[in-house]
Length: 200
Image (cartoon, rainbow, N blue to C red; front, side):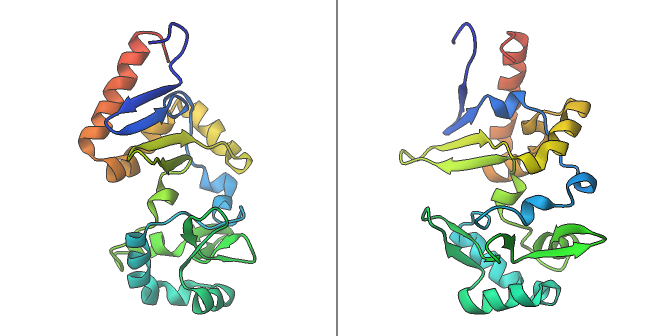
């Protein structure tokens, strides 16, 4: 171990940036109004399996989508390949995810809304659930987790600091869904050990 800092730790076959353990974060929908779903220049990263799940849920959420979103989906489907070669959800006007809807001024995900209402089996892309963690699949078969900083989430950072809630604890459920219960337990144990040793 480095005497001053450990920039990356390895849990199983996953490389985890120390920011995931040290930074604080807690979404504050009342403050941000779901801006992360309508800002940016590409859709949310998705897998082939997730595209299938989205397509299965499409009939259920179709009525909640805007006319513009329906038109985009009719034209190019629920996902497309972006400039970096990644498969992502389709977007409207170069920024809004096609699956956004609005309720009392807040931008919500129609997929998650239908799932929580018990209408579908698919919740939302894991890349959305894991934000502000970004996952990169490496050529050697490993995955790398990095903390993504975005100005639209400044209120989430503020709330996370107020609650003293580390990113990895805020994202316990999606991290467990993506990497498994045993993996998350090892991450927690590693974080506690690094804390005892004064690294974090």
